[in-house]
Image 1 (cartoon, rainbow, N blue to C red):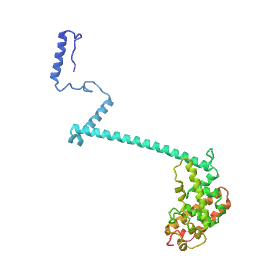
Image 2: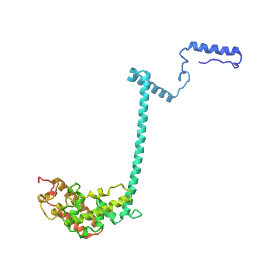
Image 3: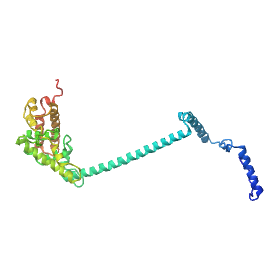
Image 4: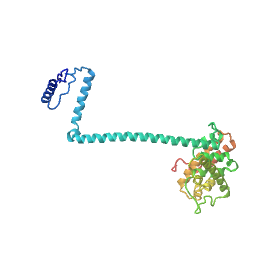
Length: 309
């Protein structure tokens, strides 16, 4: 649609002419001016435009055939679209929050890692340059029990003065995790002196490790950390290593048979790891002691592959 406007619209007659032309346009098109047709009026012959036009037509048909278009008013559809937009926005926000949470978690883990490295330096497992020491190589061989406490026992010379049976009994405190205490709260009550003395040394080693962690700002309850090592099966393991039958050994415990067997199996694995660690640091005397302890433990019904054989 085009109307001709005079070059000079200042004269009244010219303005009246333009007004008359506009009124005629409005009269002829009461519903508004028709849009220009891209193909007929604008002469657009691009292949890409034709493809886009076909896609638009297909999309319009799909929208028109959708149940929302047939059963809802335009206001209801608009409300649904707004709700969906809010949903998408909230999902994006949740994704960002998850990313921020993960980043914060990584920061916390890095802080914990730095603290753990300080503990290793404090206890002498690595030097100031991060190079692993002999204690560190020994700790690398242990994964059945708390490796820091075990290594402190080894390098503290605790096992050197103990018999094979005493070593096995002491190590059972690191593999037995059930809480069995006397009414007065003393776990060593009733233990023989040959067993209670090594256990006190274990507690000293555990307290050393706990204090090292506390000094490096690792959150830890010192008493709770020390109390996790339970001497409840020391007498039973000591008797087992001396060749006593399992039925008689079980009478020395307050646990179920399965718990005793599981503890002995874990203990045998820990002793094997300690033997490997002793060999790695060149302590053949200690290696021989642990090898002998493993032989004493690994026998009878405890290590049967099947109870039906």
